[in-house]
Length: 273
Image (cartoon, rainbow, N blue to C red):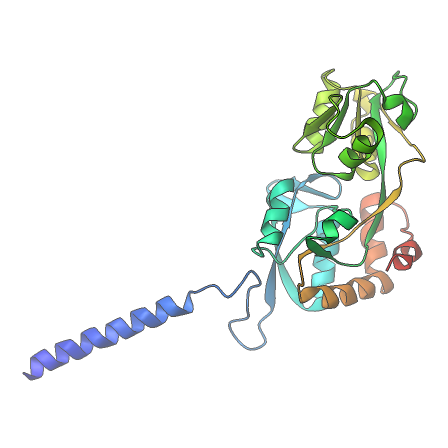
């Protein structure tokens, strides 16, 4: 009888330990909670690492201006970060489903996007520009009429072409990322690429043998990038506070000069808040 009781007691204790272990493995949300008091929380951050020099992959690691920036902001706010390349369209799925805490990926703040997501204060000023082959007769946005134009799907480059040529116009060729759009132009399948200025300028600068030129047009409005959050995220306020600190303490200027070699116009960003 004693032997049987001991055996039963042992089984019960083992079962209790097993159930306790299972219970503690349950996820508590996309933001990783600290297991011990004082442990730094880790934010899951998603991006589309195909936007050099803003975000791209170098030997398997996601790097770029945006990555240095968000790491500095997170550090200021007291967080660690885990940055994951998921692609452009999946960014919005991950954020809307709250599987990620935030996204940083040269995401322009628009009224349409604000309906479904929250944004931080602006942290980067940009505009669309036109990338063409040397010798092209395209000298302005108006010259794109009657031409094949490659864009990344779902970007402000596509929005600009929708406005100029008409939504879903057959001359607008949409691609998953800007690299594919540029390849289409280089292969002769498109006459031009419309994308954010930093993207096309960086590509033209790094590929002098391809004889490319960048065309500016004043009809393309300035746009501003923001950090993307799920709607009603509690992180927005503290991340905005951290952004302002990074703008004020010289960290932003240091990162900007590292990637672009010039001083940023911080006052313009603050005017947009």
